[in-house]
Structure formats: structure tokens, C-alpha cells
Image 1 (tube, rainbow, N blue to C red):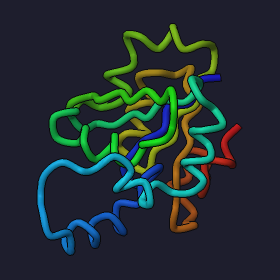
Image 2: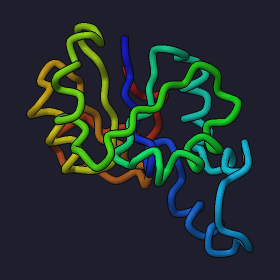
Image 3: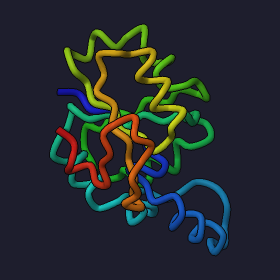
Image 4: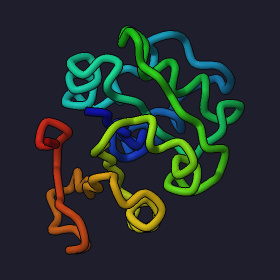
Length: 150
């Protein structure tokens, strides 16, 4: 089974990172592992456990977010990161989705990204991430940790 895991807000604690970034004395590249503490613990475990079956999917560009994502994922071998460069994730994956098997799983915290994936890739099982424990939109199964995925 293939898993597509959103980075910001799903695998990575964006709010905690924002506070760190404001207090960080220097701008620029992040050291390997510097941002690993902002990866949610269940995300690190999930990505390590799933290996090649899990990919991080982000609408960011590698030029803008590559250093940050590489730093956060440091120490997780064989992890693939797909940068959509601003494209909606479902639009980006649709031409290639069949190569990922019968029922890939996608998890994201953005209602727009969830709806786009469901519309463009109907064979993908879409799950809404709610790190805050909220009820969700009601359109997709809700998880509060990646360990709750099928």
C-alpha cells in the first residue's frame, strides 16, 4: 500500500516551528536534523515503519522548502518527497496515480487539498488529519495520528 503524507500540519508541527523560526538568530539553510524535533513523533515512526511505501507530498517547491523538509526528515532512510510547486496535489498526481497501486492512501489537513484529491484521483482513499482532535469536515474519515491510517 502506498501512502501520500502531507508535510505541513500533518507530519510537521508548523505552529511549533513558527515559534522556533521567530526566535532563531540566523536565516538561511537548516542543518541536518535541526528541525527533526518538529516532526510529529507518530509521523517519524510511521515514515520509518513504512519505508518506501510512504511519500511526503507537499505543495511547496523544493527551492522554497527543500532545506527545511530535508532537515526535518533527516535520519529517515529511503523517504521520497514530492514537491508539486504550487499545484494542487490531486492535479499533480492524477496523471501518474495508477503506478501507485489499487488503493493508495492520502492524508492532509487542508480541505481544498482533500477535495481536489478525491475529485482527481477517485481510487485514492482520502483521510483528513486533525491534530487538534476536532471532528473534521464530515466528508472524509478523520485521523489525529498517522498510526490510525489503514
